[in-house]
Image (tube, rainbow, N blue to C red; front, side, top):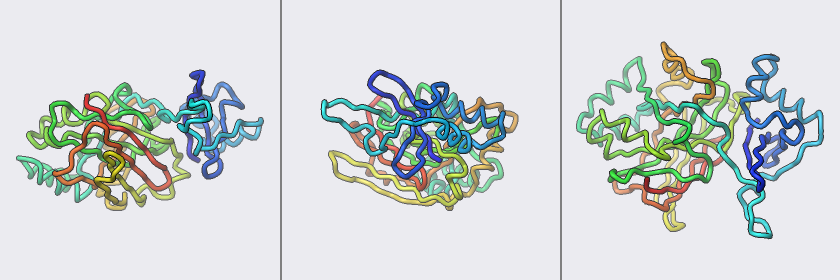
Length: 302
């Protein structure tokens, strides 16, 4: 199933399971101790039941509040929002893998003054894995994502993301790996500045269990950029084009490197806007990934 975290007008946070398409059942309304997907993951490790099995057991034990997914973040009659969608969980660390798609390797070579290093990474056994974001810098659905004030070419990077618990993949979400392409292109050693800054990442809208994702290496991905309500860019790809699997990236990341539970890993993108398109403040970025829904953010300068 897919799981969403919501906040209401009083600031109360709840965890919901999407038991039917568009229908959320509030797990917290049945068991007040369950407010985060991490609660279910920990219980799953102890009970050896799946997260989905535990969620259904909770829902079967009481009358859960039902919430329509279509009504979230929508103004009601008194001009307030009854429920808001927030980040599906709090990742203590966010990492990212680069040059995992052939198109990405080609684009990096085009923008870089040292193009050969990207070809070497694409063809090497060891992937490029870098630290992307802290929890504080990672935004959620409908939050603002940032472009640097000292960058001249900025792009969103729509990516499948996986979540790690005890070095194993326990779920998936959508990630937006915001990137300063001008800074990275100037010198590969500037990668940390091109990738990690305020509001430089977003995840959401949900956490999906592995049972919900038939094949993470075969998901349709789409990204669109809107400016003044007009679409200025759109692109599509599939995770089947990845040169490395999620499992391979996970194994490399955790070699000689202990990562905290709920660490989230962005797996790369092949959707790259052309050089004449750079993000501006006020742009809207919408990312869709099959079985994971839609992640939407507004761009600000930071």
